Length: 262
Image 1 (tube, rainbow, N blue to C red):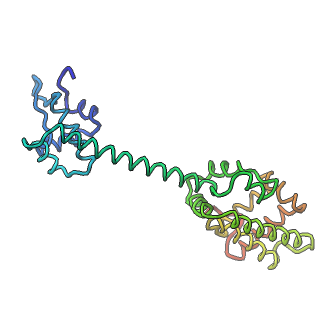
Image 2: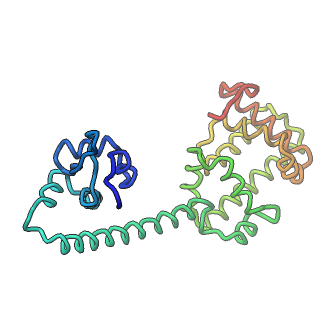
């Protein structure tokens, strides 16, 4: 450093606030030793070096009062102490890197249910399944608490669990198809019971309220992909399922025309 530094420039250099420097000055922990011709306090190279040592000790968890004693103790060997500090920092870095690796694995596990490969997903959910739908869903809802629920719950599911869910889904689709083909009214109590089974299946992944169920059901006729999916099972099923969900929600006090995601 070719010149003494003002408080503001020193704060920028060492990465703390001006208020912090003023506090450390006031308690005698790290004081600027020089002054400008106009009377402003300035930090020398040695002052900045002391600040860096304060930061190292603080990072290691030492209280400020103890840091001051360590820095001012003439019996302390500065070089050996710095070597010990470095060793402790390296150990901390190793622990943090291990923690980061663990978090990365947890994130991957909670992203898609890591125990299923894309090939297994297609095998279990059928040829119409697209693994990239998970990425699309995450991009839309990844910051919501409901996605966090989905991520937590699916991360623990085994392939056998997924097979059971697929079997339950297939049985529900068959029962929905039978109800539609029999001419069952979408607002009947039997249709409402099927809609409630549909909501319970969604609750496998996140807590799906009747209001949220209505919001999802709207996409069954608004989103061409859902229309194609359900009408491929049985022509007209997308509309019938939506109407049965609307009817079931109404019996639970939810107005389908004004339902919101809550």
